[in-house]
Length: 370
Ligand code: V47
Ligand code: SF4
Image: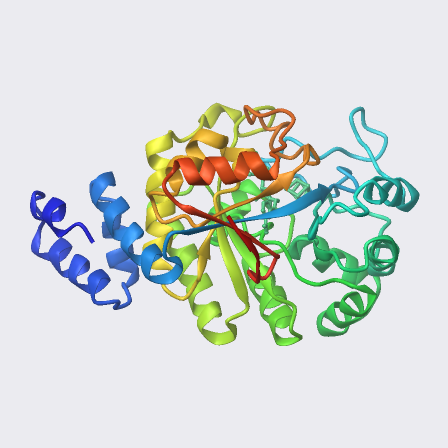
């Protein structure tokens, strides 16, 4: 770690003790996590980089994946969401299982390793509908890893099938589900959650679904949606609940901080946090979540430049090739309206940041080092 640069800064006694804890691999308390927001961004970068080096060396992971968004029809009304529509509303879509099979058939013999499936919560679709979708995909691409359905989608589809949560997750696993993405977490603090997504699964339900998934050996990811009406206490409270669950189950693969994007939704008036705040959030997540191996910058949302800079602020993963298969962020105003990167683009982006590109599968087995 660059101790000379740290020595150039002036720190309070509390800040010195926090730096000592970080360099001695000791866990920070929630109050110490909140204090991190008062640190200079350069210092946070040095500290986050130090931790990331210990966990991942110079490696930066990516994968070969596509997204499938089966529908944007959703019974809920999250205020930050630019993407959901009601049944028959202009701009709504629903792909049939046949449409989806046609799409995935294009990826035979392409070394695609992951299909990420996330969409709206459709009022008529239960776990057997989505289970059959997964089963059909696996007939075409038997070796692909299917990471599908946020806890919010799972909550609805399992209840609709009238089975217990555990039974529902086991049945989905039998259909071919391999892991669960991190969406739907938003912000756990109940008052803020009520204001930004009042009618969907609660924070406790999100946490219980992930805990139950881990217990039936379905690993998952975790997210936070930040940069809207929450404050830094809410952010650290959220990270703290994730850290506690990870201590218990060790089932989370990676943490993905999702910056609120403002276009075309009911919270547009708030605006967006700037790049400095994005980098701060990555660094603080890396420092606070001492039991998470990986921190991911999701490039279709952040853009390529910010994702590249984030690699100096504790991030060790930039997701995948995507192949222009997601609309969630382009509809919310992401710069890249047709997100796609070739393996060569990803490898160059990582090498140009002075890091070592590693292609991984969804659960971080190494496929190829570049
Ligand atoms: O839960 C919706 C977010 C999530 C906006 O596990 C928004 O690898 C910002 O699950 N601004 C769904 N964020 C996406 C998701 C995901 C994405 C990338 C990687 C992984 C993974 C999972 O998208 C939602 C919500 O938090 N979202 N609207 C918006 N306007
Ligand atoms: Fe529906 Fe998900 Fe959008 Fe909320 S974020 S309205 S659950 S599609």
